[in-house]
Length: 109
Image 1 (cartoon, rainbow, N blue to C red):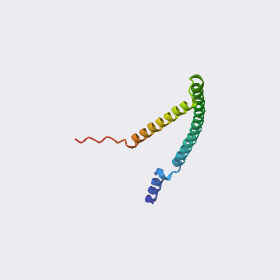
Image 2 (image 1 turned 180 degrees about the horizontal axis):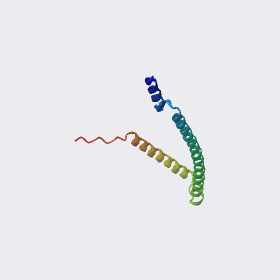
Image 3 (image 1 turned 90 degrees about the vertical axis):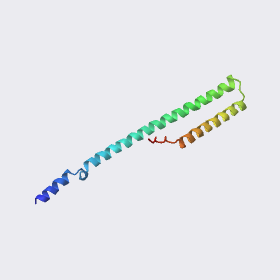
Image 4 (image 1 turned 120 degrees about the horizontal axis):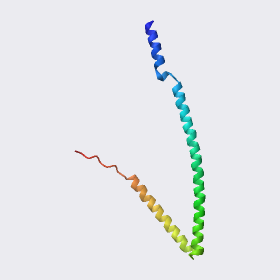
């Protein structure tokens, strides 16, 4: 009889049998997921605002180059293509550097 009482006490003390901490952790995770969803919406809105702003800046710069600086459209197109190619080349170089970045070897004593 004493053995049954000892087993019953160990069962109640075992935290894995108590489902309450599991439910609280699930509730915390749900809250984190909801917060992440809200942050994503805010980031998406900010990204859209930045895209609109960038489009306006490009239009302004194009207008300035053509009307105020007297650049021809063909020259401006060539400069834009060259800038795009340079940006692509730079991004590819950075990507290759990140791919082949090697961790330093540990020094042997």
